[in-house]
Image (cartoon, rainbow, N blue to C red; front, side, top):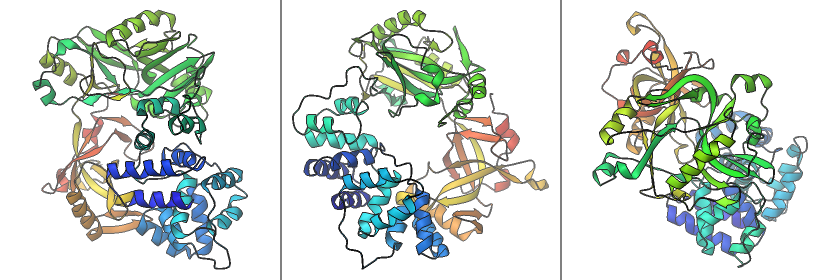
Amino acid sequence: MEEFAKLLEALVYTSSRNRKLTLIARYLRETPDPDRGWAMAALTGEIDFPAVKANTFRNLMKERVDPVLWSLSRDFVGDTAETASLLWPDNPAVETNAPSLAEVVDTLSALTRKSAPAELPKLLNRLEENERFALIKFATGGMRIGVSARLAKTAFSQAFDVPVEEVEEYWHALDAPYAELFAWAADGGDPPDVMGRPMFRPFMLAHPLEDVAIDKGVDLAEYAAEWKWDGIRVQLVRVAGETRLYSRSGDDISATFPELLDVLSIDAVVDGELMVRGDVQGGETGSDKQGGAASFNALQQRLGRKTVSKKMLAEAPAFVRLYDVLLLEGADLREQTWEQRRAALEAFMPRLPDSHFDLSNLVEARDFAHLAEIREGTREDAIEGLMLKRRDAPYIAGRKVGLWYKWKRDPLLIDCVLMYAQRGSGKRSSFYSDYTFGCWDGDPDSGAELLPVGKAYSGFTDAELKKLDKLVRQTTLNRFGPVREVERTLVFEVAFDSVHTSKRHKSGLAMRFPRIHRIRWDKPVHEADRIESLRSLIRD
């Protein structure tokens, strides 16, 4: 536990990606099994202790520290683990001997909701301040230390000089603490035996297509264009009679979409966009007509659910719009060209039920100017933009320049008024960086009120963040826990992809991917847009 705590502390205090890689790689080389495996599970978000949540520690703190002091401190620091590790009362009567990470796992795994409040203090009393911080982060799974799962796996590959693509491919077929993976990478053993397991294969990803890429010689004749659908990218895997559905990050989401588990009767790995059925007609441009997909807002009602009701299955049935096929009846097609895989996928489609699968249509265009016209002329909610895929490209995990491009349509813009602000997390925990904004519900000159329509925490520079933080502090009207209500003095130009009706918000609207496009320091708040302007953009 001591070395893991030192690792987290060092990671928190460095912003350098290369330095983070070096720190994690060194820890993995120098730390014995199984501690290093449990550390990797924590860094990649692959660990969970159901009986221990952040609220468990908050309740423990309120029993030992004045609740008002705790709330004020937590609000100021912006991180439960850091605040609790600093305020936890030292007990000189308890001998401190930090347990190993494996011991911590055994202890946390044995806890129940009932026993946790009594057992966790015994563990915390054995730890120093930085170790308490590490324990709480480890136990709750909320690292937020600037290390992504991809970066941790890259550090693993660098530590033992093995390809990161192979690490990722084995990763999702193995369980923590990954003894087989370390035996292969660190000790030179045989590769992990993953045959016969419905394992996840890392996705091939795309680079944004900038106008400069066209000028540098991206020849449209060498690429196929298809719609970029607005669902969630998934991989459906069937091996030896078992089917799994994986998200883009490799999470198993099979339980959330049970209707897809019995419809793939052939051993295969397919790549596509998961959506729900609806009446929205997407891609109705030129000769391409493909509908049946509802907006992302409809899909969102099903995401993250552990159980799905019969009513929801009937009202929002899921299907997969297929892009690619990676493996088919024992044959690995990833080394084949896109054109060869597309032909194999088209030949495979008649063997799949059209109730749960269809094929993403290609988009025909004379040249880039024509393709740009098609892209901007399509505003259906089920479409984000276009994909360009090099016809001779194999299926390669990760982003490889020149093979796949994504060309998102330009965002919608609307002027909104800043209403509320909240502190960020991690490096932004000292700044008010999360902003709620609204539009006028009528004519502001006639007394109309502002209604919240969205929240954003990106799209501004560090210098702008400091100015915004200062404005929030100087114009605070009310405090609601960690949230500050501010005077209506500032207009944001907000960019977003689409807007939908929502019963969860007072305005009746919800934005898709809102972000700050510009800060309109110059614009009077009464000139901000009205709810009706935003409502007119709904395409449901």
